[in-house]
Length: 430
DNA sequence: TCTGGGGTCCTAGGACCC
DNA sequence: TCTGGGGTCCTAGGACCC
Image (cartoon, rainbow, N blue to C red; front, side, top):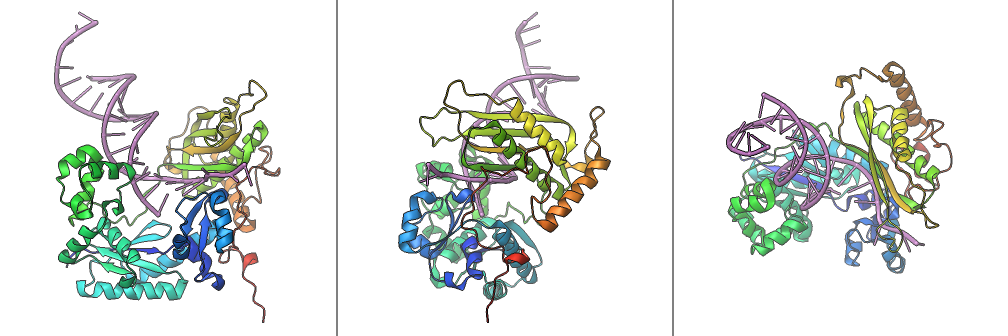
């Protein structure tokens, strides 16, 4: 039996999550905004038809949204993450192996399903997910991940296919590859597209038929792999065990421009706190913390400043207090008072780590060892309180975190966390 | 100082993804 | 006024070693 991979994803996933809990959103244009209500990152078909593009800044389309009756939502990651888990639970009923690729996409191994039955299984899967979670999906099937992705793209763009496209058959596949633009291929971005167009490549079939060697020269081994994958030779295995992550970052734009040192310190302390939570969830630690903050390139005429500094810790840790101290130290050694009456107006700050390791397996310091016997239980107690009473219920004192946050990210149009907060359950009146 | 042929590790930057 | 956040992989080049 031939190898077969399916890629299933939620249609306009974030928008579909909002629709599940508000029937009035059906058939009207809906968009979901990025953090800070910055730009559109999910659009329903109706919103796309109005010309709203991926990444359109909200302040530029606000008026159009009002005029055209577009329903606008801030992103509600708690809700989307929970809905994602529900869809994956359904996928696992249909396939022996599932790779969760992103919040709304999963690869399924269908190799053991007879080729004649794969389309039927995909239709059954779609219907089940729709009925059990409310999320509409599309399914693409092919002998490699790259072809499954391409099939999914076809399933989405040709309504007659009813949300399922199977590229298992070689002749059918060849016909489709001639009709699809090479820019739709997974892994071909702007830069590669320009190179390929210069080489006279237009369709996916053109790319498939290229000699891999010159492509490797121009697009590295990544480009070469894509060609093999398009020919049906699998180079990208299903990754069933999530790999240990290598880096972790918490970065946010401010909801206003920030000029005060105390506010910047409060922000990086808050980001370091969140970083600690993320690290502890994976049992990970870091011994280097990079702190950055900068002005905005959109503020033309304003003085620009971009700062990035890396603070070294004596040994790996995920202790919030140690991370906050490191983050504040980063600000300490880089903060400058403006030379004249035009202060730098910072737009964004963050903390970044790139050297994560399992804390239990990390080497201990000879000098400056942190007290893990104390830190572990303290952090566990803090995490437990915050899990029970909501994030931010317990914060370290002294870091200024208890004070009002005047800079924090905007979510002015966020829907309730219907599935994870008992206080935000929908109300029914009878 | 020059001459040669390997290695490893780290970092920065580019590209791409969702 | 208002333009997201968080990842991965790959390569080149420098520092350093034998």
